[in-house]
Length: 353
Image 1 (tube, rainbow, N blue to C red):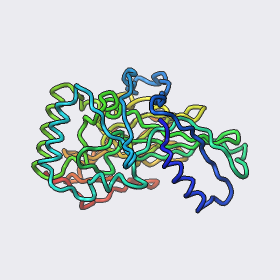
Image 2: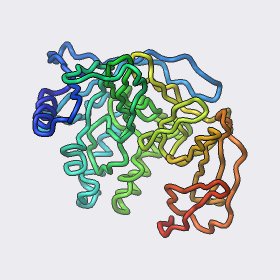
Image 3: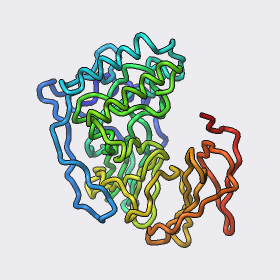
Image 4: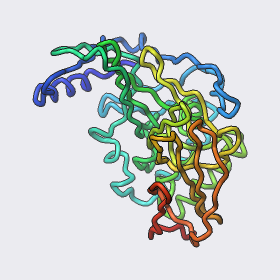
C-alpha cells in the first residue's frame, strides 16, 4: 500500500533538521490513486520442517482504508462477523468504564506510535557517501503494529508483530516492513475485522472483562477461531539460533521467519520444535555465542509455575526442567544466565485470580 504523503513530508522535514553525519538514505515512492493500490504479496516458502506449521492457504486480503483525519486504519467488517462486532460495540460503548490513557487508542496510537502499512522491498537511494561493498547483512527490529484500528480499549502490547528491516548488500540498502503472518493476523486479515481477544486491554473493569470473555467463548463455539492454533502476536523480539530466525512473543510459540535475497521478509510458520515445545516460551532467550545453545523458560498459572529448558547448537529442544521452588505464579518476563547458573528473580508481580 502507498505511504501517505504526510508521512513522507514529516520524514523529510525531520531529516532536514537532523541530518546524519555521513550517509543519508531516502526512499522515493510514487503516489497512486485509491483504485490502483494493491496489497503486496509475499511468495510462500516451502515447509522447512515437520514441526513448523505452514501458513493457511492464501485468500483475498481484506480491505482497509485510511482515515483522512488521523491517517489510521479503520475496520470494514464483512458479513460473517457483523453480529459479533455489534455485540463488541455494545461492550465498548455501554459496559466499559471510562478509558484510562494507558488503554485509550487516541493516546496509545498517536504520533510515533500510529500504525503504519507494510512496505515491500524498496531500494534506498544513497544521497551522500557510499556503503562499503564488504558490508553484507541486515538490521531487523520487531514491534507491535495493529492491523486494524481498535474500537475499544487498546494496550500498546496488543499490536500485531511487524518486522522492519534494512538489508545492506553490494553497496545497496533495501528497506522492508512486513507483518509476522501469525494465526491471529491471517485470520483477522481474511475476516476483515478483529476477532481474537486482546490479552492486555481485554481486562478493563469486571463487567466488561466478563462480557468480553463470554463473547470470545461464543466466537470459539461459532468456529470463528481455534485457540489451539495460538493467539500470540510475535511482536516482542527476534532470536537467531539453530540456523533459524524467530519472531517471539511470550504468549505463544515462536514464528520462524526469513529474509530473502531481495530484502523481503517471509513468515515460514509457527514452530513447535518437532512437537517438543507445546506451550509458550519467553521472548528473551539467552544465546551462548560459543556453543550456539539457546536457553529459555516459560511461566504459567498452574504448577509448575516456572519451567526451564534449552536448545542445543542445532536448535533441538532438550527436556524441560520444572522449578518447583517457585511457589506462586508470577509474570516473569526475563532472566539471566552465567556459565554455571540460570538466574530467576522472585518478583512481586504475581497472578492472584
